[in-house]
Image (cartoon, rainbow, N blue to C red; front, side):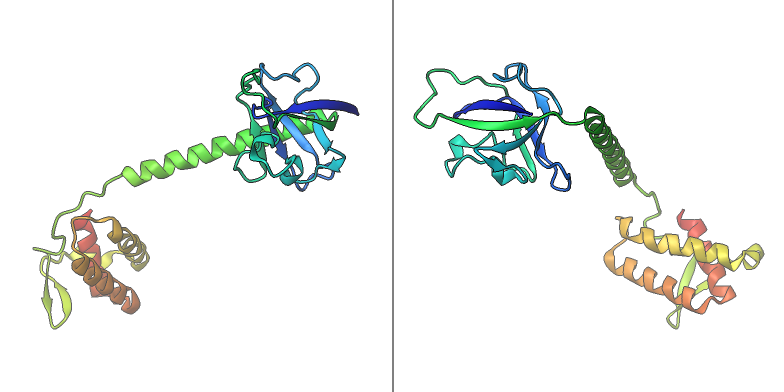
Length: 230
């Protein structure tokens, strides 16, 4: 354990610090030291600031020296994080009466533990970026379908659709295959911009009714619609 004397002023200390609330050791873990930091010769990455002005550091608020925003320990508006990585040294011009001297206690942390934490954070960032790219790519995909998928294929009689151009092989299609494709088709209706909301609702209700009845002729007709629209 070593004792530090930190000069806090309107400038930044040049440290990036994080408090791990669930860590039994607590303390503010130093995760980055800017080359311009005044205390770079005294501190190393992985050191913990465990006390400040005699108070134990267990949460971010413990690093606040007083209510004056200019005299905080480089605190920024981020949850569970203290950051001051710009490394600006305090010049004589901007040192004001707000400049104070405070005492802090730092201890050496387990380097292996810090490396594991940084590795987990890096893996999380990589995984998050990959998921964001995949979601963006999926969002940009467009489904190309005819403007009127029902036209020329079926006609409405007494509230039901009957096949106009029916093929013999449609009756031999397994029900499970048609039901699976029909469910996928219903889910994709929301992405079909070329269909009006009224038509989309009508198609969806009709398909859901077919799924409920699961009759051979209706499923065969749905399969024909899917073949026409995809």
